[in-house]
Length: 412
Ligand code: PMP
Image: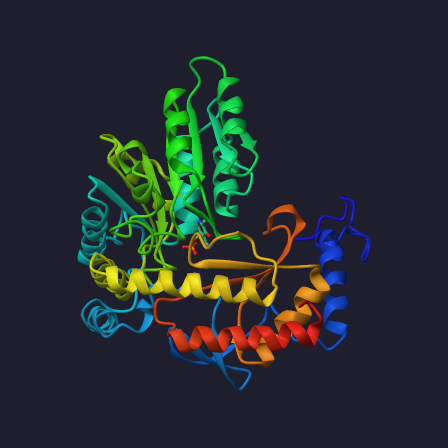
């Protein structure tokens, strides 16, 4: 019903709330006006295996999928998903605390407890939500979060949602971290947040030293092992296992969207009060749970990853071969030595990075083009993530495509 005595907005005078993105729109249009293929709009027309897909009609090697352990086409995993789809239907249509807890959700949580040898596991609909939920629920107003400046967006968003005081420190700098911890008022709640592997440069945190410092100052510790689960550590439990500090951390966050090969997120913990999180964590309560087929595939995949030492060894070989090969070709890499399954190739600027990305895709190789704000220090990166299913020959092929593209664009 119209109310004629109230002021009417004059057509065309309202503020366009999307105008704040004009700079990004201009940057994107500038890039694409040269005829450049859009690096952020790639379509996989057919996926042939964990390492191959048809993109724009081309047979393409996948080197930017985080599918570290190549579980997406594992026959047992696929079969488990099909069976759950038949037995339980396509979705739960509800929250975990209402109608959304099925047998499969309990089974995947048990698989996580067995995988990590920990007392509690809580599954979220994504890894993003696991960080959002756990961080915002445990660290609220008046608490302090000390975190690495290069933390993933989901960590920052979790901090913002909980409204704790956020104190960032320089990437992987133990002394800087200690300085921040020292300054926190006596008696305040303290949470230190670290990642096992930092996904932009593929470098690993000095967790042994950092966890010791956090404990010295009485802080609780949360480690995001999204990029190390399944691969790093003797049993694939992550950098916390490799560094021998798994028993000293309070919460491990992980995802099903990388080594596990599906979608979902989780937190595992030995904290005796952990189960209360299921009732007080809003990104867990106020959203629908994962579909039965997804939790069934995750459960089968996690149990297989417990016996993945051969795959882990081959993935290390791949990582070392690619790192050495790229270095020998003259590319500038994110780390001096390979530290994970991510090898970042540093580009001089966005234009050359985009040109290189295009030359690679036209040569039949997909990598991630990463740019600020996702990247540290304003870098443009071509981020390569290796898979245990890449063969030695494929790594050789990848290097040839890099060499040709690098020469064509003038980067090497
Ligand atoms: N943490 C880190 C460190 C990540 O890199 C990512 C995803 N790239 C996530 C959390 C979120 O995981 P998901 O894809 O399951 O939302």
